[in-house]
Length: 319
Length: 226
Image (cartoon, rainbow over all chains, first blue to last red; front, side):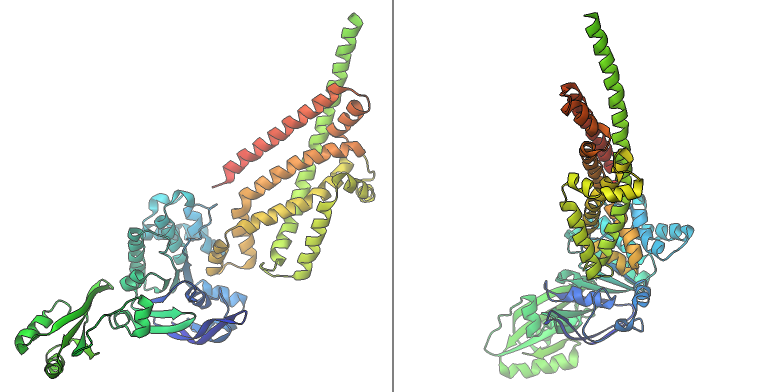
């Protein structure tokens, strides 16, 4: 669906995006994560041509973005919806006219527009606000209008640029649920740019981590959050305090087995003791997954790794 | 005594007809000039916004040329501009005095002002709204007429109101160098003949006119602003 190869962008000799390669699959929710100024919004804008890039390739829906002329770019953009942090609605137009605008621009008939706007209003739950002006809406409602507007032309891809960053936690949840619904029901591929880890954990299946324009992590979010490497830990601001004596083993419980009594069962069956020295549970994509670090002396560690290997589906590593 | 009263009434009768004529002339000058200046100013603003360095199709030379011309016209003291434009006025209207002749310098003098204010109104439109419109494939032409114009509309109404008021003031000034209207009355009857009553009434009428225009502008702004 989207294929980025060795993409770089310079801004006045400064490299704002540095050799980025990634692939977004059709139908997934992909997150681009980073602190402010990392270049994530710039990368997102390269996808629909709002930003130009200096080197590399970027294929979207089988089109090479950098070779498109203005007409071609506008046609590509009609297949890619986008929502923004500040909603970016026309304040002088009511909800109906805001949602209708993309279709007006593309010259659809009034009947087609009316039909589509009504469908979208019911999708985002704002039927009652059809003729209301944006200033009378709450932040969450404005974002719903913006989502409806982004879906007007039936796009295959939806780009979300910090769409929940200006919203309170409860509203953020409801907007994220709406995005999930759109992803599943309409099969729209969604790319989310955010600095909020909770957003990533809740909806994204895979994520790209950006720091100073460079990729510092790319993969499934279970791997990124539960088995973070050093850069990822620094990125998340996490810090583990592990004992220096004995052997530390990290156990990782995927969501399929996170409710099984594996640790206590292992202790009983092997009739041994070990210390739990670190651990966390995370809710990722509405599943609970966990990781645990246990500590034991070196002689017994072999029996434990054998047990883990033979009797359980736990993923583990010796630290 | 009887004679004094008769002459007083005669004088008021004359004054009334002089003032009514003058008001009509002032209104004609102001409204026609505002209409024309808005039209020209709007066109100029569109060219400015298109050729601006962050605009739709940047053109440094066109922008700079308009920019300098507009600043130049704006820096003329208006009364001097009227005199400088005498040949142009004569060419366009056939004479350089009178109510209709004054429409020429009033239009040329205020169109740059309106152009700047409409340009400002366009620039005030949130950049992210323009970006959002681009994100669903809106072309450059449509950005101006479907996004910038509707969003800037209330500010443009304010700009036109302000211009109308400035033009009323300018038209009074034009009266001193051969234009008609309230300015000419204040000059000819009030200043040259030392008749304070004429000065009083012209000033009073101008204040009322400006108040009316401002209030109408405010009401219109409230109606269109969402």
